[in-house]
Length: 396
Ligand code: NAD
Ligand code: UDP
Image 1 (spheres, rainbow, N blue to C red):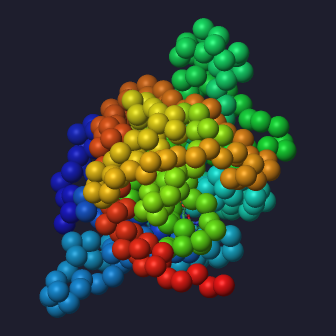
Image 2: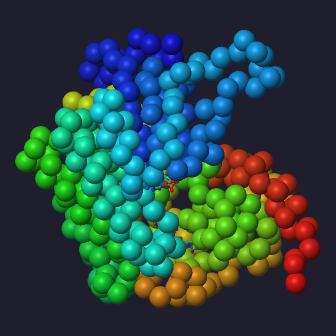
């Protein structure tokens, strides 16, 4: 059996467990399911409304693999197609499990200011029963929050060339010390962050008052294969995914990458496979992970969005063999790109002290290497489909 005889960080054997994973069919969920199936003996009850990204784990072996062939994970992953907004089966699945991981959310910035109600419901209201069922049934919960709960940095309120902007205390984001700073209510971009913050506070309070065993994860721009969709290929033509998929789509279609408000915001990007290692450590080391909030990111991979566009252009040219466009980027205003009510996080550097101390985790992959493997995947998966779509005559 995969992963039999494995030990936790304190040298104790890891007992096989059943995990109810809500949002298992999404980007992070699909990588986590793969990891759990390939390297551990755990069972996953995978809950989502979609299953395309985990189809390869759910389908029986192909004819080419032979009639007698079995996946090493056969019988350890079950898909439950359900919407947690309104499905009475959810509590039963949580009761059957040792651990619940909640990944379900609306989490694309293009939705925050255009679908603020859905965003608040999805990130707060819909998560409430999950927290309640875990608390009432004494089940452990790993809940996915976001780095966006920090909002803007303190330094961003100083004049542009103020020397204190260079002081780490003014921008490094610490789980137990940094304030959460959001814009005005009409900047509905922050509805997502605010809903996530309130569910974090509720989970924390369930821990404090009712003994809920919880871990909260704050992802800092995890990126890699299967993130979001390519508009017009495996998602709506007019849809706006997160930046990796937006830029991939531009590169695949040989059109300039759009820099929102000049692309001056800064982000740190972590490779999904590094980040999943951190989640596995949380799953298998409850004594070290319970009661904690963890930043999970790569402070060494910081770039402006403009620099990200430049690096992606170079890497894509290498993996596709096509020369870069002469004009590789264009500026667009955030109002034009996202609509009224958009705002942005200026800079996101995770402090790594807590995850380092509790789980000994460090990210490994450089930005160049993670973009190399991700854009190789994008090119292999989408280049032909894009060519076919672009060759089709446009209906008049
Ligand atoms: P994703 O959109 O790829 O995955 C979310 C999944 O949840 C989707 O498959 C969706 O169908 C499912 N889902 C949503 N509502 C549901 C419902 N009502 N019932 C059943 N399933 C539902 O997003 P992701 O990038 O995998 O993110 C997962 C979690 O991590 C989210 O909570 C997100 O806020 C958080 N997060 C991710 C990042 C990142 O870098 N990827 C950054 C910050 C926070
Ligand atoms: N962005 C951009 N062009 C795009 C898509 C996004 O300049 O085509 C910018 C966006 O304004 C933000 C950053 O890229 O500053 C990261 O956006 P993403 O959607 O990945 O999510 P965020 O990190 O803001 O949560």
